[in-house]
Length: 248
Image (tube, rainbow, N blue to C red; front, side, top):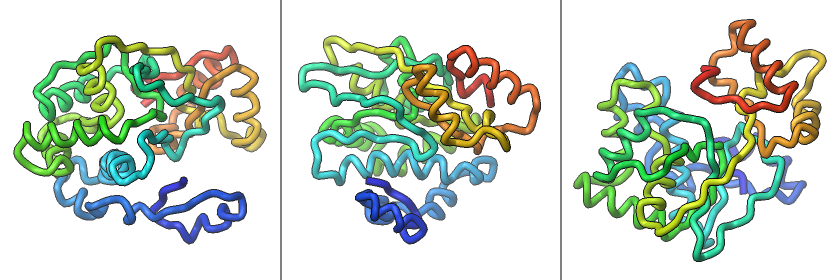
């Protein structure tokens, strides 16, 4: 299923048997309400915080026991199997952003449990585990979990001060006897590879040839410097992964 704020603009995808739903079918808060709860310095990031809360709402309102969430700017190049009932498996990433762990601690009262980041733009979510997490946040913070996330995010000085992926993964890891983190080859800044001679389709084919697990076109990040483009192309040409924080 594809969840979007503008289903009409993507209606042609229904011919390809793609189910399309409006984000308002799942989300309790509007983007404007999210923006109102953020300080002036973070209002430009309202959409980013909105979509993180939306993911939890999608899982909570799903009829399935597990839901695979994929960021809209990401192309998955290999299947990711659903974890078995007795295993906790998360991807392993070189991402590291301290504010994400500060917000996890503020929301849950717990320390981070995973050695590695779990942010790779895609994750399996258990509806039961997400429900347990948000219920715990409400007990810990004394208010609705959505409001709690925005309150904690608003108080942190950094731009990106909350991650749904890090929060969920560390919550699950805290309650598991054993957690496995498997390497996941993600090239995050495929948007830096785009040119008149290099289309999205061509980049996807090249990424498959280089055995990436997924690629993302994160155009909301900076792409104005030639150095970033040169570095991205060099890393991609030899099959190395990019880190979101390093490429800005």
